[in-house]
Image (cartoon, rainbow, N blue to C red; front, side, top):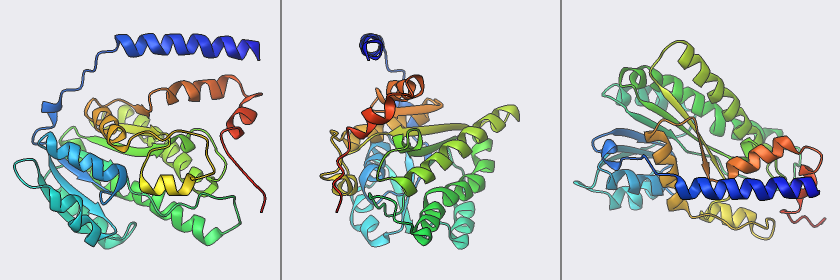
Length: 285
């Protein structure tokens, strides 16, 4: 444990120095007039991304399953010249929506932000196969379908594909069996896709966003009493995603220190399970 302590201390010092010396190369003006399609925009991180993009002058199309919530909320608050906002409702993984998406993106697309998720059960695995199949359809297969439909127009415009994932897609955590499975699938597919696009010399960047616990209403409700962690603010998480996509980085970690958590997880396999489980509260019924 002494060795681990020294490594953690050294990592913290290096991380602090990097954070102090780092100069943000993000230029908000680069997003002025950018054509953006954002999924899962009715609440949470998606809603916050919509506000940021509008503030930067992007032309945005917002989508969500709950059309009424979208119209009443973020879509109703955005108006020119802050940003151009169009919206429509859809059911994830639905063929007609993909057809509609192809027609919409044919007019030009610079950024595709895949952010939507299905209703997540933060609980121990209870063997519900119907639920995990449904969640995989929403959280994974629909991402693949939409990305595939968007690739031709993104390539034409040297655009960016931005995929919102989770620390649960890098480190398997308690209470997230189904959710974690979908996020690991996203990591595997889109990380492989990135290599293939580079090998084929196709001008589409792929940015995978690894998020920790964020203070959205859904996340706080799911984890209440079960997790000993402080949630990070959704507006800052949304901005980090947008910046990473604009700069076409391969991976975004928010909070930033999650990158070092992932490194330590790989370096110290013998102690990691005990440390991880100490952040979760489980009481047998």
